[in-house]
Length: 70
View 1 (spheres, rainbow, N blue to C red):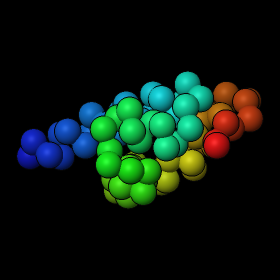
View 2: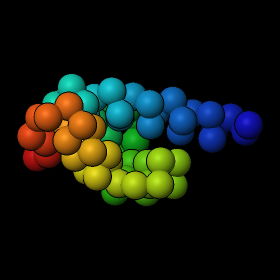
View 3: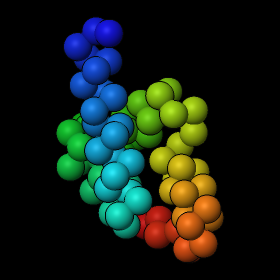
View 4: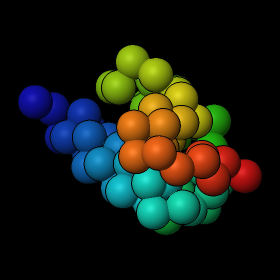
């Protein structure tokens, strides 16, 4: 796996952790090291096959909680 792909995988893992904990998408993108939210969304969708918002809604739906997307 190329270094940049590995780095993006680590960033996506961090975004997943942050948004499940309730962080908004813009803050999760910044904390994970993406240049902006749209860059994070493109990378997330490429790796996960869905947008971060869809991911959060699915996780919260499974847990029986309402999504906290800001």
